[in-house]
Image (tube, rainbow, N blue to C red; front, side):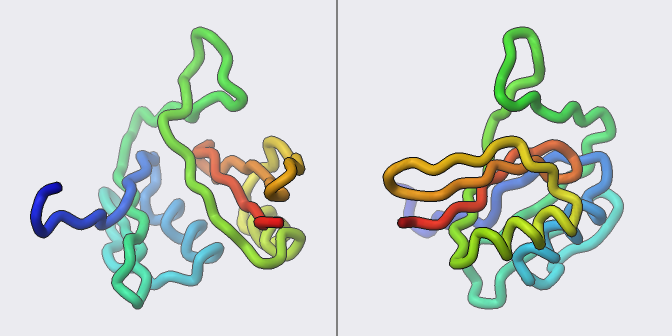
Length: 126
């Protein structure tokens, strides 16, 4: 373990950091910490890890589910929610696109793509 190391935030590539930050701000309610055309960041007020957004002019959204020869997902975000229907409605109203919905023995899950195509899951533990 490296002494003093702490996860600050995953960084998502996007052609428009400010727009994608506002999408996640709507979902999470976190304040903007940085906000420029090249870089935007959301940081929870409690100091826990946030999300950052870096400009990538040539961003290629991943294909989900993965298909050979296409841009592959390199990460996705998981958000545990209390009310899946309400969270799903808010995500869709903010611009998320439903990719999949399923129930397994431990949780109900909805997989979405954000406006730039990054997959994320909303789930309720059962």
